[in-house]
Image (tube, rainbow, N blue to C red; front, side):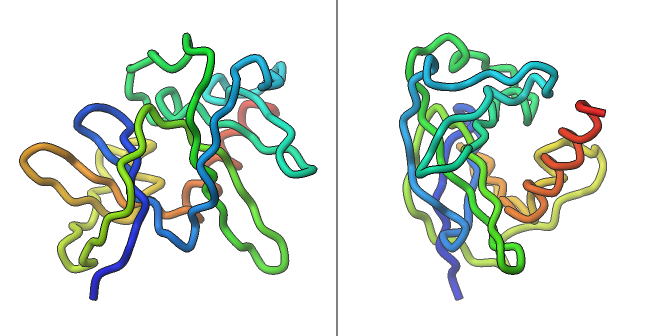
Length: 158
C-alpha cells in the first residue's frame, strides 16, 4: 500500500519526502523577518513569530551539509513546517527548501534501508531512501529530525 509524502528539493538531484501527517504548511519568509539568535548553531537562520509562538527556521542546506548556499543570499525563502506530536505537546520546525515538488506516493517496500555508515546528518534523520535515474529521495523521519536538532543544538549552546 502506498504512503503519501510531500516532496521538497534539497538540491537538483536530492529530494526529501515528508510524511503528509507530519506536514504543516508551506510558508514564505522574508529574511529580514527572521530574528537571529546569537550563540546557536550556524544551521539555524533564527526564529520567527508564527501564529502566536516562536518557530525556528532551519537552513536545510547547512544542516544537511549540501553546500548549495544560494538561499542564504535571497530576500525571501520558502520553508515547509515539519511537525510531530509528542504526547500532549507538539514540536515543529520550518525546513527551508529551494523548490517544492508536491505530493508523491511511495511504496514502503521500494524504499531501501539506509546504511548507518557514513553517518551523515541526512541518514540520521531519515528512515529510508529511493533512488531512480534522476533523483535520490530520502524519506524523512520527523521524530528523528527533531531529536537530532535538539541534541545538536544542545551541544552548541552548552
